[in-house]
Amino acid sequence: MSSLAAFRIDARVSSAPNNRSLTYCLYRHPPETARPDSAALDQGRGRAGPNYLYRVEACPAGHQPTIPERVKLWDPLALREMTALVRDPVLRGRGVPHGDGRPVLLVPGFLSGDWSLMVLHSWLQRVGYRSFLSGIQLNVAHSEHLIAALRGRLKQVREETGSRVSFVGHSRGGVLSKVLSSRVPDSVEQVIGLGSPFADQFDVAALTNVAVGVVKTANQLRFGRRFHSEGRFAHDLRQPPAVPTTSIYTRSDDVVNFRSCLRPDIPAMSVWGSHNGMIVNPEVYRLLGRLLARPRRSP
Image (cartoon, rainbow, N blue to C red; front, side, top):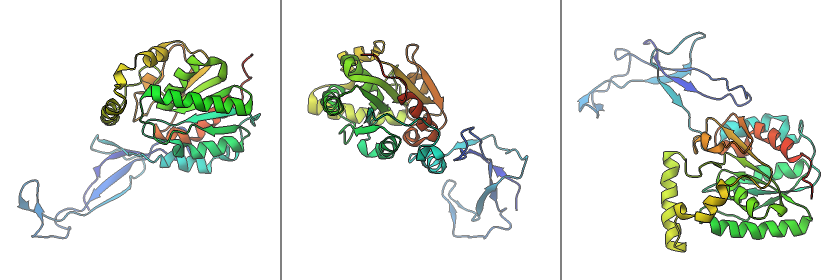
């Protein structure tokens, strides 16, 4: 067997918030021991070639890959965070203050809906809060259209509970929550954004930008409006927070630029993990438990 054709693959250990990484190496059988196949063609070079066999194993202790190539495993389903949450006592309410029954309204992120927040919704109810969903099935509409619907939902929750409502918004959901809180501050207790680009809502990854472009066109056809022409919405987003607002972000965010989650007038807290994984991240749940239990604002 040949020496290592090495790659370094960063894989977060599910139960380790200290961001440990594992090193894996790619082994390749040499041509003389590989199973020959004269009919196999090297399509890249247009000639016959051996049929190489590969396998991946953990590298020996202390080994450093010879090829300085780092491969980051894409995890769109947030399996690392979900696995960590299932094993963490915080899922059962341990280590966080018990809620006092105050209402919490959850707002999903871009291209997502209430269905993505069901785990967080159930957890909040389990630890003593009255959790409510936004009614957004797919977060793709024009911002002012969504704000109008959220305003109606906020009014319903406020009338049902008789108290100010705390917002927890994921990604674009946090941006919507921040703008709504500036327009009706007397109805909002606080806003907590999870990976929310409060500084620049369009500072996103290239793939996300493609989706934004498609949604821009769809909204222009439906509402006659463009995302980049949201004058009042953009103005309200730039204003200082009217209620206590917190940004929880991750430096390894693969959807938005994490720097767009940072503003001098909004306290920020960093966690490990991915953008999509923030809604099932045990470290995020601990922070939410602390933030939601803060004393209520004075009338």
